[in-house]
Length: 448
Ligand code: S3P
Image (cartoon, rainbow, N blue to C red; front, side, top):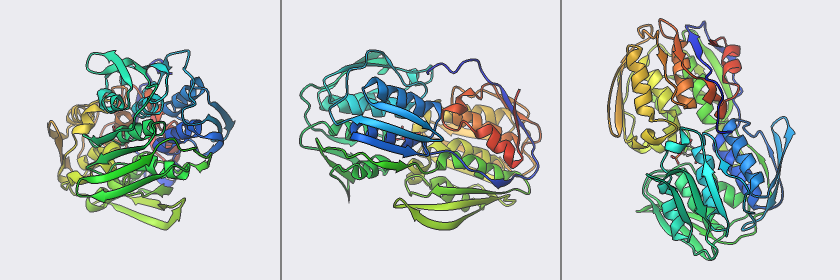
């Protein structure tokens, strides 16, 4: 649902040592893709460990509207009876993707090469976000789109009745755009080619191969050239969704800044297209170790062990690492506040068009809490104060953005005075158990 109901104000306060094991929920990116690819396969796909956050539930509801049978079997187990590539029915209702940019953009791609008309909408955050980055390449397949000014939702897409394959170089580092083009390419005859200059998360490519599509990636001077052969018959799969490294970031970062902490976050994927935060934290002097390193489902996985890190120092985060940690900059800026010296984060223009303008949202709250922040169109710098020196004591706006809300709540676990957010409701989009999980580790976090 796009409405999140009444705001849920939340507060966190200086906490005793955090300790124990943090079992974070399933990966949001892989959960969306499991439902969408399951709906495009013929037969029954089964999923375990699905993230049952609102974003993913909205995608499940959308897949039902396109004709797939999607069943919640309980305990994170789901079943999807797909309709096959090109088998989507025209929904008889508006598709409401709530807060989810990933949901709406991937579904737009998946329907763009079917002869159906679909109207999309979302919540106040999603309806501000740019959609032309997806509808421009979808036009190459023959799909038409009419939306509000600035290419914003609500928007109607008329899928191509006679699609042609596309050859597209993605102009911004975006896995959502890349994925939308690949999903559209599924129902176009011939080869669709997507080129990305910077590597972004590659779950769509890996999962398409798993579902039996012919897809290859070549690394060239232009970047990653991904070629997909259209009109495959996707074979249903069993998918065991790994835990989300972007959610793991919150207990990990909290442990690094709360004195005396020692927390284990088991079975976190270290796919290089997602693990940039953990590398960055280690460069800042974090006591973050990878235990039981192993391969699961072909992906590198480890149990992350994060301990209070008294000697954190600011660093220059390489811009070429940005795509692999794009969702983690808000919580990194919190850790940077407790580090000594400056943490400079260049090459992050995309942060301005997420669920909120994440540079502005974090800079406002950090400054109000007593931390110096400088920022420009595509960079920001946090002037760290060192442990014990961060004042806090303010209420921050979460701007309908789950990661902003969780970042300020993590911050309040180590500031001199408590930190509050005006609305923790959006946390349910990606990490519905955030509050009990953090409280279980010993954090003082509560609804106010
Ligand atoms: C996602 C891609 C990223 C990321 C988002 C999930 C995905 O967005 O921020 O949370 O699942 O493909 P962009 O494609 O806009 O970078």
